[in-house]
Length: 552
Image (cartoon, rainbow, N blue to C red; front, top):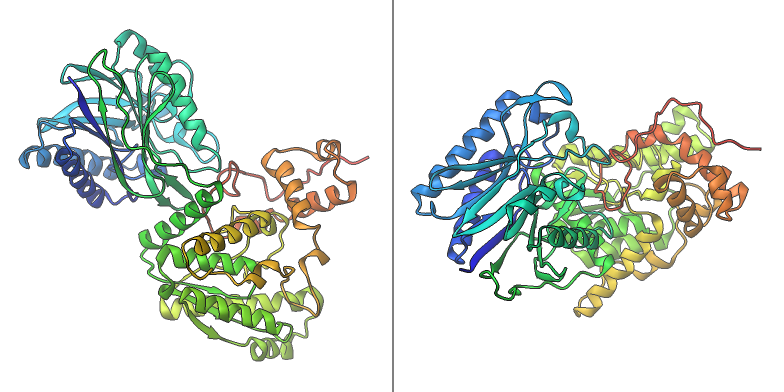
C-alpha cells in the first residue's frame, strides 16, 4: 500500500524543551490531519540544536528523556497513537570507546502507540568546522529499520550519510523501502546542491528513495535553512520544501512496483536571495530567542549600515528598527541625508545625536591626534548606542562586514560594539551585490527600494578625517576580497598567493593586516555564518603567535 510521509521542518530553540515539545505535538497533529502515516522531525528537535556542553549536564538529559515520554503519552491520549513520529533528542549516557567517562548519544526516537518503539544513535560525530560532537556524544553502533504498514523504513542522522560506509551501507541487507534522514545542517552558500547530490548517491546505494528533513531558523551564529526534500533512486527530486520557513512537506511512498509519486516542488532561490534570507533568518532568530523586540544601529549613510537596516526591517519590522545618525565635524551632508532617507524608506525610528560636544569634552582632557583621535569618534558613537540599548532595551547591531573584520578595519569598543553583527560573514563585494538585489526585488514587487542609490554608488568612507575614503588604507575591495578569500578560506600562504599572480606589496600588506587583527576578531559580536568558512568556530588561530609568512 502507499504510505504518506510528512517532513516537519520546524524552528526550535536550544534548551526550550517545553516549547519544542509543544511544537512537536502541534505539527504531528497537522501531519495526521494531512493523512500522514509517518511524520519526521529534524535532528535534536526536542532539545534544539546544537546543544554543545548542555549535552553533558545530567539535569538536561533527564528533562529530554521526560519530554520523550510525555510526547508519546500525549500523542496516544489525543488519538494520534497510530501515527509514527520520529524525533531527534539527546539519549542516556553510555560508555564510549573513543572518550573517557560516559557520554550521551545524539539519537532519533521512534514513537507510536504511546511508547518508544525504537531508538537510533548517530554513528558519525562531526568534529570539523562548527561541529564539536565527537567531544560531547558517544557514537551509536546499531542500525535502525522500522516497519510501517508493511514498508521498511531505515533511519539515520545527518553526518551518517556524509560518510561512506557505516549505517547507510548496512541498509543494503535490510532491503529498505525508504531511507529517512534527520538533519541539523547549517546553511552555507552553495551547499543546497551538495545535499541533494549526496542524497541521490545514497538513494542509489540503498535502491530506495531518501527523505531528507532539515531544521529551520537561527541559533546563535548558525542559520538552518530547511529546504527538506525527497529524492528518488534515479536521483530526481520528488518533493521539496521552501527554505527559511517552517513547513510540512507531504509525500506519498508508492506501493511496491508502482512509479514514484511527485509531490510539492519548490523552485530554488536566486543565490543572492538565498544569502539575504539567511541573514534575515539569523537576525530574526537571535533577536526573538534572546528576548529582543527591537534593534538599534548607527546610520552613517554608508552601504553597510544601510544593508543592515534593510535586513533588520525585513527580520523584525521597520517600526522596530531604531537608527541613530551620529555626525561629527567630518560627516558630509550627503551622508546625513542618505541616513534620513533610508530610515524613512523602511519606516524606522530615526534620531540625530551629534558627537561633537562629547568628542570635544574628551579632547579637552586627552588632546589626541591621528588614529587615536579618529578612534575616539568611533568609541563615542559606540557609547551612545550602548547607552540607548541599556535605557530602551534594544539589541545593538554592529554593521561591519567580513572584509573589514579580516583586516582589522574597525575600532574596538567603537563601531565593533554590539550584540549581533549581521554582516560578519559577508565580504564587501557581496554587501554591494546583496544591496542591489534587495533594491531590485523591491522594484519587481512595485515597492520603494529600501536603500538609497547614493549609498550604493558613493565611495565607502569612515568619515573620521577630512576627505577620507577606505581606499586610502586598503586595496580596492574587489582585489582585497580575492586575496582574503585565498588566504583565509583556502588557507593559502604567501607563496601560493604570489603564484596566483597577486602583487607582492598587496599580498604582504593584506597578510600582515589579517594576522595582526586576530585579537579584534575574538572580541567582535557573533553573526550569522553564510560561507564555508566564517570567523569564529570555523577558524581558530592563536592570538599570540610569532608565525609570519616566509618572505625572501
